[in-house]
Length: 189
Image (cartoon, rainbow, N blue to C red):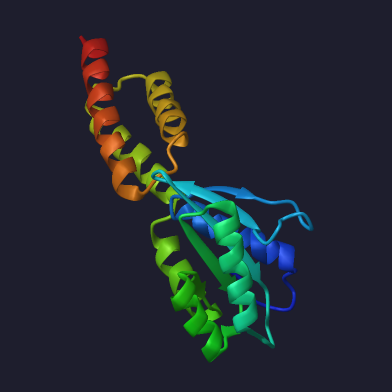
C-alpha cells in the first residue's frame, strides 16, 4: 500500500510508486536522485515506453506549468505514455493541460484506489497461488518430500522471471503445470 504522510521522504514515496507500477506489470527503472532530467521512473511493457514524474506534495497542488514541463519531457525522451503522480492534488488548469498534452495525471485519492486494486492481485501473491496449485495438482504423484521441494523451487524459479500482467502469468502457469504433471507421471512409473 502506498503511504502518503510527512514521515515518508520524497525518495521513499518515489520508490513506492515504482513498486506500484512494477506490480502492475511494468519493467521499472528508477532514476538516481538529482539526475532524472524530469523523469523519476523509466518504464517498459508490451513494447511501449513510459515515463513517470513523482511529486510528493502534501499541502500544495501541482500547477499547469509543471504538467506542461513534463509533456516536454515526454516528447524529449520519446515516451509513448507519461504519468505525473502526486500525493496531493492538481489544479483545474493542470487537469485541463494534462488532457490537452496527453499526460496521465494521478492524484493522491486516485493513487490510493489504484494501490488498493493492485494489492489484491500483486505479483508475489499470484506466484504463491501458482505454486500452491502446482503442488495440489502434482500431489497424487509425489511420494517423496524431496520431489515436492523440487517442484516448489522450480515453480518459483520459472515464475520468478515473469513480471507481466496476471493473465499472461496464469497462461504460462498452465503450460508449466502441464509439463510438471507429465514429468511427475513419468517419475511415478
